[in-house]
Amino acid sequence: MARTPAVPQLDPRARQLLRTLIARYIRDGEPVGSQTLARHAGLDISPATIRNILADLEEIGLVASPHTSAGRVPTAQGYRVFVDSLLQVRPLPETEVERLRHELPTGSGTQALLGSASELLSAMTHFVGVVSVPRREQFAFRHIDFVPLEGQRVLAILVFADNDVQNRILQTRRQYDAAELERVANYLNQHFAGRPLAEVRATLLQELRAARSEMEALLASTVELAEQALAGSDEDVVVAGQSRLLGVQDLSDLDRLRELFEAFARKREILQLLERTLRAPGVRIFIGEETGLAPLEGVSLVTAPYAAQGRVLGVLGVIGPTRMAYDRVIPLVQAAAEVLGEAIEPTRS
Image: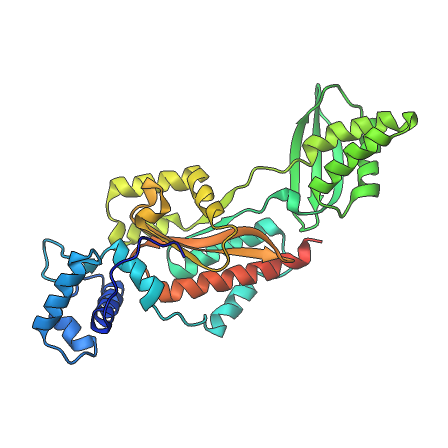
């Protein structure tokens, strides 16, 4: 999990009060006062003692006092201490794991699975679901066709092993006729179907260097077309449920919401943030300013990488207010990553 600088060691009473305060605030959305904590913290201490401990917690930056209330609310640093050392996370209930498996069935195309995963995370948390798209070059292609277009352009139709179909417009150095394109497609399908794109490109270049003269023309044409057709496409991120944030009490600042929605529309910053977590195992949590992105300063991001055949393909996660039920969102994100990887795995080879 992403971490901020260490805070002073808390004694057991302060830890229990902070845990109770944050749990009550997440549940109710209202500042928590000493009388409420006296009733719910399970500590045999007076409200006056509680007020003194709260003052200490405020002094070290873990809670704050809104001007309109005598109660306290957690700060971003308070949430960090909560999720790192005070939160008890239980595995996702089996009924919800089964829902994930039902909604993310094996054998579906990868793009369809990613869209479903993003929508499902949003529906199950009522926040925003995000899933980064794997690089295409990690998948084997099943079949390729080329169609001549006007001028020096060619349409490449790629069918991947995960059932995804992509159409790409290629700008070539010269004009190709239908017969030439058919020969190139036949060569690629016969010799390279079932192999990852990056491996195909490297092998073609080696074969061209070693080719006999009668093969050079075909291989030269194949290399030119394949270099573009089989190039890895830019990564993307699938975002679902942005409108759900409009009803979140903690995100009522319209200017901040506009910045957040613009970041969702651009996707670039969100993708860069997800990529930072790509090689980190398990769940990571960014709270407020920890994201390093101004539009996300008022929200939290919970992420986990998803993998197939032992290879990390991307990251999925949930973006919501800092006042989120972390004990529910964390196991949900973790389980969704595992189920998505299981669903993609049979389609990659």
